Image 1 (cartoon, rainbow, N blue to C red):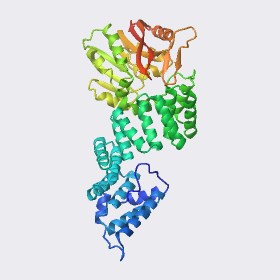
Image 2 (spheres, rainbow, N blue to C red):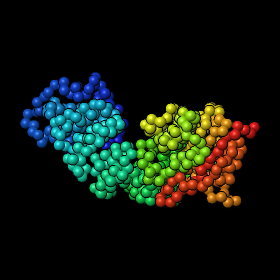
Image 3 (cartoon, helix red, strand yellow):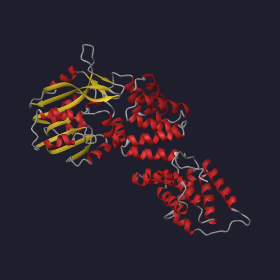
Image 4 (spheres, rainbow, N blue to C red):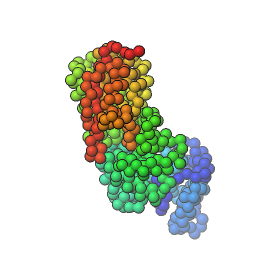
Length: 483
């Protein structure tokens, strides 16, 4: 009887009518159902006919006639107070209308009546996942899979829980199994593509997105990730076409517009939009650290080496982690700090940084504005791979120079362009990050009145197995600011 599944259900205009009736219940919907008057089925009605009546309700549900479906599900419960399918179907309807507490109570009753139905546990897990109750959701999906190990939707949703926890390897294994069970499923292809993209397998992700979108070209949410994957794998025409396709659906999408500019290396683009940074890193936050491990990311170590050769770690300084992210630099900076401040645009990243318990302050703010508001405040400013989202550096470097105390140090990493006479000052790359020429960095730093102690080539990360060429700068503020 489990013919309707919560995952994948779409709303129709009739949903508002359904909401009226479900929301009209005062208190718990389950309590209201328990108080309904019971009725005898029409004379001569047998179990098969009641099942057929319930299937008619499922048809109404599928067609979007939610109020009518609810009336039919309720009628079955007037006839049979222990009908687990009717409770489950009402739970699906409640979940579809965002009445999650009612949905969970109804799923629990269905499971109490018939604990051996895997769909009951899987849909309970779906609602728990939406409510961010990940431990309970994982338990529900695990129970569903214990009843049916080859349950592709439960495998996909358990993978989502694992991904949200940052366990990309486990998520990938579950999704590969789900795709084996439904090799032509666009949803399975896109879910797996999302994970392998996060793990840096850009070619495979691009292929998976291509296959899925050929079958379901109106999966609007997938175009952005598809284009990112294509761009990172060097398939620029496909990437640009995907961003243009997305913009045809969503003309105001600043993410797509910026990344299209990145595909084209737009020379007029000077920095990433704040909305892009927030979205990118809020989405990235739960599995950011694992992704960085996959990329052999070492910018925090590069920052540590620069500071170790310049500053004695006495724990007496005011230190600023510029673009702190999840706090990967906090362990490096804490030994120097009497007071450690982290600033980032992404609330999701700041929530992860707070788990380090090493910062005295964490602030959600735009970096340049925050620095400009705190003149002569910091002894150390450290920025690991944050300035890569700014092309034109002069305002930001000038704000950092103003925020340093005399004798203070500014250490940062960038991605670099080859140094030759034809090299521009900076270039927006397909990754959505900027690369800078060493000559431009020196010019901007000196214009801000900072002294370059070192400017060296480094490799802050690998992508696709290849080194990303970068720069590490160590600067000192001598108390002189050009007018």
